[in-house]
Amino acid sequence: EDKVVQSPLSLVVHEGDTVTLNCSYEVTNFRSLLWYKQEKKAPTFLFMLTSSGIEKKSGRLSSILDKKELFSILNITATQTGDSAVYLCAVCSNSGYALNFGKGTSLLVTP
Amino acid sequence: EPEVTQTPSHQVTQMGQEVILRCVPISNHLYFYWYRQILGQKVEFLVSFYNNEISEKSEIFDDQFSVERPDGSNFTLKIRSTKLEDSAMYFCASISGYYGYTFGSGTRLTVV
Picture 1 (cartoon, helix red, strand yellow):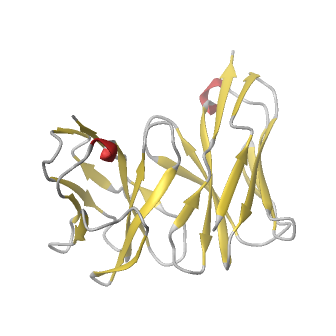
Picture 2 (tube, chains in turn yellow, orange; picture 1 turned 90 degrees about the horizontal axis):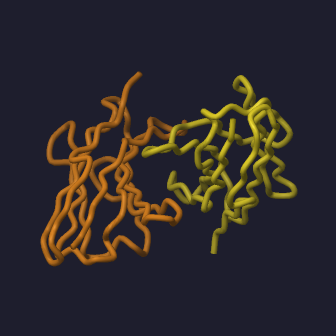
């Protein structure tokens, strides 16, 4: 059975801190790994990773994939209160484009 | 930026009633999906739809559920005879080819 495991499940940090969110997976026929930010409602797309070792960056957020060790990390530097959200990791396998989500990491950034 | 639109945003229904959740995917997208998220749990895949037919479905998507694309724009999820455990946020999503999904803002279904 395919699995996506995120850690930690929740995290509280102060503004300005750097955080690292983890996602490990076991899927057959891996295609891609995606990160999403979920605030009140719909998940919003952050990154899609398909190749090992290539860092994707967007502002203060970055992510990298290790296909040998089957994990990905999402880094957020200089955190702001607006970064408070649930961060979702999802894996897409070649069996279709359906996404298998982890339970998410709930991040709270305090002023 | 193109959006996936879902209506209604919140629906309350009595147990045993049928509900239809509606979605307007992004116009040039080819693949359409329904996911659900029970409160406090992870987002779960229900069904994917391509070329006017179901291409993949999960174990959750049993005979109680059906999907349709009744015209060129709408994509619907019907739940027959709703149960209490169907209470969840239902997300529609669409993609064009291989690239990242766009999710709608969701319909919160409450079965009482």
